[in-house]
Amino acid sequence: MDTRRVALAVVLGGLVVAVLTVGVQGLVAPFLTTDGYNPPNSTATPDDGAPGDGAPGDGTPAGSSTPVNSDYERATVVVTDGNGTELGRIRAAVAESYQQKYTGLSETDYLPADRGMLFPYDEPGNHTYVMRGMSFGIDIVYIDADGTITRIHHAEEPPEGADGNDYEYPGYGQYVLEVNYEWTTRHNVSVGDEVRIEGYER
Image 1 (cartoon, rainbow, N blue to C red):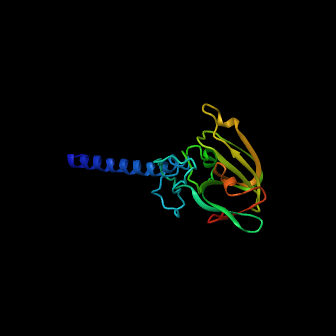
Image 2 (cartoon, rainbow, N blue to C red):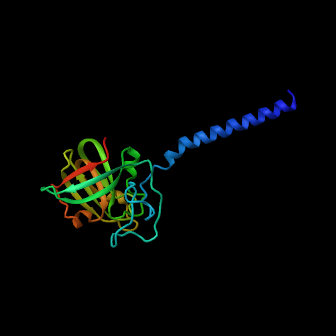
Image 3 (cartoon, rainbow, N blue to C red):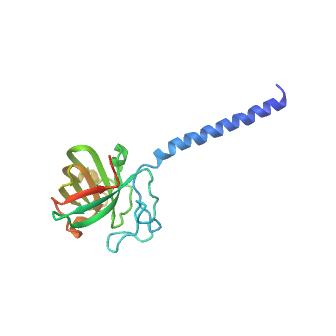
């Protein structure tokens, strides 16, 4: 084998390795970025499904910024009372996979006032949510298959050093919605109110 053939073989071998490396990284990268729904600061636009500005008094730290996870579906959750009057609406990331449900909001630093996370299930059932790894309080809203709110928990931030797994919040429903702490109180949302999910289908 002459020198030119050896050089050509080395070059081709290097190209093959480079292509394989890029391909593997492209396959692995999505799995490395699916753990957590991390709201950004006000650089996100309100209509893109990403969190926007936090309202005063909602616990949003100034200057906090982390990237939005593009692997989450988005939905708009609208809450109405028995008369059909809208009480509030939330732009929610949808936790569909087991890993997304397990992580929940635990890797999120804060939630702007009109953002949250929706956990859908294939059918109604009993579930228990915990405050594992949470650095802020949330409301946990259980929703039946027909959209009726069946239970609301006001889950405070666990004390420093506490195991969030010890803080259990059970309920029955086909959907669970997590929003800012006492969002339901501020919007006069209660058990028996109705939820409509827009922009998302299972």
